[in-house]
Length: 388
Image (tube, rainbow, N blue to C red; front, side, top):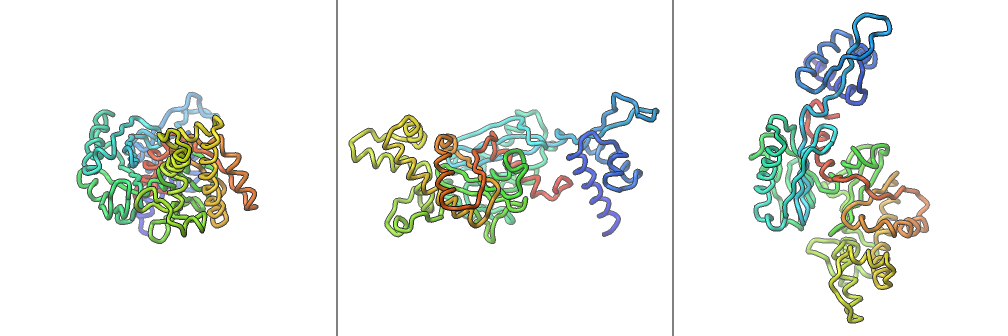
């Protein structure tokens, strides 16, 4: 390694140490990293000039007398990240600092802009930056979650049925109009990164994020790293089969390209199944998945039967996943997860009955998990001084 490369490596070490050990002195950093005091002093001066850190004089004098020591802190507001979550219904955007604290949010309808979606994202991004009173120079970059299979290396959306995208060069098209780097990934991968950074995954190295919405997705963290699979399709559990006979029959697909589990556990599937049962009895058929869960909690027998059928498929899917991956935690997110808390004991009971391997099953408690994860995607992928 040449001297320039070594200097950059040491600079990254110092910055990461400061991020994780706030309030240290230059001498403390030198001792901890076993790098000479003159080298540490030079690096700290550079980081101060580049605004990555700030230095604050102690209120108390040194224990051996003399001048008061200075303590060094990571400057989480040195630059800002933009996170984008593209959903089938809406696109959400947020500006956050380097600690993941959201400064401002915006959103717009996906379907009314679907034919010009990239243009709409660019325009809303520029408006968000302007409203935040920031300059483009203060934006470190953008992370984007996409509802489909993405080639993260080439920045291409391979297939996203809900927004009618196939082989869309999203990264290149966004970077053509925005003056900072853009990184993209599947929306559930982005969500599990959010949990890893700020949620249930901060203390676990092996976690799954299962999103329950229009379809069913899964983000996987193995040994602390995001697992994408050989063709970026790891976690596509919407295609998992949880009933052989039903799969061999001509079952109804929720949407073109959706799989068996999507079509039995997703929101449209729950709504459709409830309506089918009620059609037979001649009752009202204007049901949403949320309403089905609400009525099930209130004791409606048809709603209970519908929810239990759906959760049975989910439970057996989780049994299969647990037996292969053996995660410490499974985090449930997405729109349906907001209604599922009442049924968690039953879900856990089914799983426990069929598999002796324990995984803690919890609901996400992190607001804006996908937006935060999109910001963290940038920090994880962008080859910069902040990349671990």
